[in-house]
Length: 427
Figure: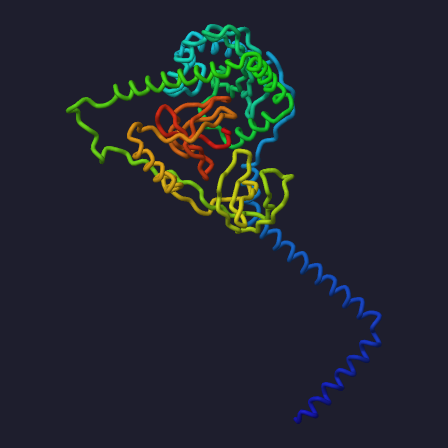
């Protein structure tokens, strides 16, 4: 059969089909239309089903993770005075013990006090005469049975005729036996820290803190020597605490001839890691400062990597961007590169070491000035929240600073030694 014959045959069949379609078009076309619509619906449903399944397998774990890590909502509830049964009694006993130097009682009421804090409490009590009735205000804490307490007190010190006003913030918790205690272990979760920071920014808390600040500032205006008196008092206390610690360390040194611990018996410490680079896990704005109202410099895409200059305590990260500095919300970043803390700022440490060797008159770290503590903060022996706690610096206290580091920590001189505090808590 030739190609022309095949073509003629196909052409004839097509003409016959066309004639049949024209004759029965009123029946056939609606049927074809229904079939096409049905097929479209089936394909769309199947595609949507596959999309949902993919989202469930990929997105669901992220949603669960975010749910677990979601920050607590902080309620706007007013400060209450003398409202929580047991809290007034707790602080009456605590302040009485503080004035009397009764560190055993203080240790029962506070979790936790290290050796330095116990010595500081005992030393401070030597300079306090008395305190008047306390004003105690509270707000509910981040967990059931916890409270944020604000204690306004006017302490009377030796060698100064008037009581000096002050405000301190405490985190009060309830133990398994239903007893209240002051929690100062410094191990609060991100949620707890977020909650406490947000509470501090509420209007009535700011007003209460301003009340103490205004009372103190008024006294300083009336008596300019007050600030010098308190600074000298603090320096005297710290000097005595440092000497007591030095004596305690000397007494713990092994006697001559005593067996020394072999290197095999000494447990190696794991090196502390510091995050040096971060990458974006979502599309996020890059801003000129740590505020959602700050000007936008650009947008970070998923996977964009930046050098981390500082992770701030207010939920923002300072990064290097276009030759300068910028800010991104920390929740949209994750670590992409870490480095041993001992390697961060190594050049600066080497220079500092050379300066110390050049100064034969002293072995103390080189001090470049002072910083003031904004909020109570732990002092640690390394630039990490896992490092050992050496003590606590309290709001208003001045610390001798060696260097502000790029990793969010400030190196300070503390009891004659090098120590560290989080930069967000000093200025």
